[in-house]
Length: 191
Image (cartoon, rainbow, N blue to C red):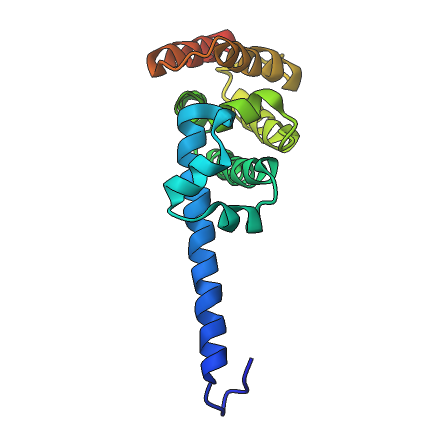
């Protein structure tokens, strides 16, 4: 980069524009991949992603050499958002109310987003242990209210919450009302 007292050269400006274009293309690719994966699950193809993003396949493969690399990038972004949502619930004033809001929100996200649901189900692309740990902390905090069973632990969360999620995914259930029903059943099971 040029020192502050010099004028950038045409070459510097062109390089800066290329970096900006590359960043925009990458953002478009991730957005397109999220949309397609949300709609179709992990069966969506890289050519479909490139077409939706309005870029060539080479542009996608330059940043993501394999479809798996693209999936991991999307899933990492999704899990990061879920972790932020869970952390926000942990920071809430009423942990029980946050828990009662969190579960339907989680099930709603999974109902709408096939890549997130598939990744949550498979657990191989992005380890879910950190997220499950945060959910366990939220349950523990909510348990202080006395409105959640005192014997609930992380294994219970894995079996009851993740078990319901897993079955809805295996059954390829896409109806948000069905997902909401099972979110309510999970909440009731832990009361």
